[in-house]
Structure formats: C-alpha cells, structure tokens
Amino acid sequence: MNKWSHALITGVLVLLTPLTQAAPKALDRVIAVVNDGVVLKSDMAAMRRTVTLNAADRELPPQDVLEEQMRERLIIEELQLQEAKRLGIQIDDSQLQQAIENIAKEQSVSVQALREKMAKQGVAWAQYREQVRRELTISEARNAQVRRRISILPQEVETLASQLNEQKMQKVKYKLSHIQLKLDDDASKAERESVKKQAHRLVDTLRHDGNIAELAMEYSKGPKALDGGDWGWLRLEEMPTIFADQITNQGKGAIIGPFRSGVGFHILKIDDVQGLETVAVTEVKARHILIKPSIVLSDKGAQKELNKMVSQIQRGEQRFADLAKQYSDDPGSAVNGGDLGWSTTDAYVPAFKAKVDALPEGQVSEPFKTVHGWHIVEVTDRREVDKTDAAVKNRAYRMLFNRKFNEEAQAWLQELRAGAYVEVLTDDS
Image (cartoon, rainbow, N blue to C red):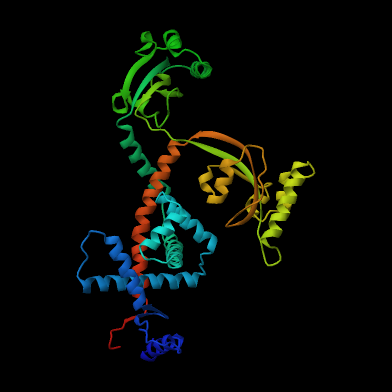
C-alpha cells in the first residue's frame, strides 16, 4: 500500500466525522496499516485499559515497550480477522450468546451479574459483546488454519497412552486368584484341545458366580493351588510377567483368560483393586429429525412442521424412522432413520446435549432450536460403559494435539506476519 492510501484512509475518517459538531473533538488516528486494514489509536487505548485492568498488582513494563507489544498484538489480531473474512467465518448472535453464557458459567455468575461487572469496570455491554465476537472469530480462523497442519499418528497416541498407563499403574495393587491347567510339551493335539476346552468351561463357570478358590483347589496345578489360587496383593512389577502382560485397566471382578504359556493354560480373577482410577460414562442411543430454516421456510414454519410430525408419531400415524428418512435435513442420520448411534452427550452441541440429557427414554421431545436448525429427538436407550482405556487414549491424543497445536499456531502466525504488508505510522506520517 502506497503513501496516498494512508491519506485516503485518514480522509475517510475525517469525512465520517459529523461536520455539524459544535465543539471540536479529537479524531481517531491510524497508527498502523495492515494489508488493506488498519489499527487505530482507539484500539490501542482499549487494549491499554484491558492490560492495565488484567495486570492488577503486577508492574507493567516501560511505556515504550508496552506500546510496541500492544501494537504488535493488534497487528496480529487484524491479520487473523482478515484471514477469517477470507474464509467466510462469521459469528452469529446465537453463537455469541452461547459463548457469553459459558464465560458467565466459568466465573460462577449469571449473565446479568457479568454485565454488571463489566459496567463497574467502565466497559459498555455492546463493546464487551463485540470484543467476545472478535475473539471468537479469531479463534475460529486460527483453528481452521492450524488444525489442517497437524498430523497425529496412531502409534504416537499408543506410545504416549502406554507411558501414561505405566505412570498410573505404578501405585495400583491387585488381589489376584489364579488357576493353571498343566499341559506337557509333548502333549498330543487331542490333549491340547481337551485342556483348552476345560479352561473355557472353568471361565464360563466363574462368569456365572463360580467360586475360584474351590475351582483352583480342584483343578489348578499352579503354585498357589492349595491356597485356593490366592496370590494376595501384588503390584505389576511384583507379579509374574505372564500375569502382568494380561492386565491393563481391568477392574474388580474381572476374569482374564484363558491364555497360554509354556506350562499350560491360565485363568486370572481380579478379586480386588487398590488405587485404580476407572472411567465409567453414560452413552445414549438417540435419533433425531432436523429441519433447517431457509429463505422459503421460516423458524416458525420449521417449528410447525416438527410439531405436526410429533403429533403423527404420538397418534401412531407415522413412524419416527420413516419421517426422518423422508424429511430430515441431516443426511448422515436421515438414511438410518435419524439414528445417531451410541455416543456420550458431550459429542453434541450444548442445546442438543441439554435436551438429550433431560429426556426420558422413549419420549419424543418438543421442537427445539440449535445452531444447526430445528430438531425433535428421541432417546431410545442408555448404557453405562467402562471407558478407562479410551479415556487414557483420549488424554494422550489431547496432549499431543495441544503440543502440536501450540507449535503450529506460532509458526502460522509468524508466516502470516511475514507475508503481510505492515507499516507503522508515527505522528509525523
């Protein structure tokens, strides 16, 4: 951008100033040109207030250093906003309201209390809303561009998950019982099959409340047979390797096996566990019908259509699945009769999650709106699932993603800055 462009921008600002003002008022001033955008003196003033407010009792750096840091921050923000515009990213009022509600929730206050807090700090509510919208827009642009740069291999997740498991398992103790069915090295194929079948029968018996102590004393050829197979309390590093190799995150009452070693077949039962953190989650099986408002279909129209469907389902005139296949605007689930499969409700957007969490099984909801459109939903089943292994892998994935995201985000911002036209204007410019 040439020098005349700076004059044009300044001229536009002058033209936008009401000419009928009785009293003279200081004009806003461009302090930096960023590609086709600008950073204004008022932006710096707003950031200075924010920084001062957030600093609390901390001492701020010298004025010239602070000015440079703030200016650079605003330049980077402007570049990200330009990128968001290029990508067509827009934050509508419903998304903005949801974000503000989440901010209030994190601070354990109501939205009204948050509004009053802003007022006490001298921040107009409209200004605060636009700042939140600005930050959401920047975040969406950054996420869109940085995520595509991140690659996480399954092996990376497995390796880190194993390390996390090892750290977690160091303090875990297991009370184990054991049955060993002996098998000689020179055993015939028929003998091997016979012992294997016996091992499976013993596992079936145990799973139907069989007494492992009695079974061990009767059938086991292991070193603890006369003790009812009881190995007592052991940490992983204290137990035989063939035992430790079979134990991952199983909880109390788990039956493991049969598994083979050089001396025969083994069956383990975890009688008790100390120090093991397990993760149990509730999964729901739900189905929904989505109607998206459009130029020809208003919000009220979409709601009316869904109310009609609810009535048809309740009267037995139509089946939920048939209506979903015919009318739902969610192509992924419509083909399956609206079925969303088994999932935790955390996978859904907040408004959908709240509705599903509160809905009894077998009841069709009234129409409700989310960022995707208008829905009706039915929960067909719920179940408790042990997700300990999945939770560890999810944690490993998040750790890897966060590490790489921070690295790639910094690299992306540096590339964005290096490829931009930026000119800082002094008072003499």
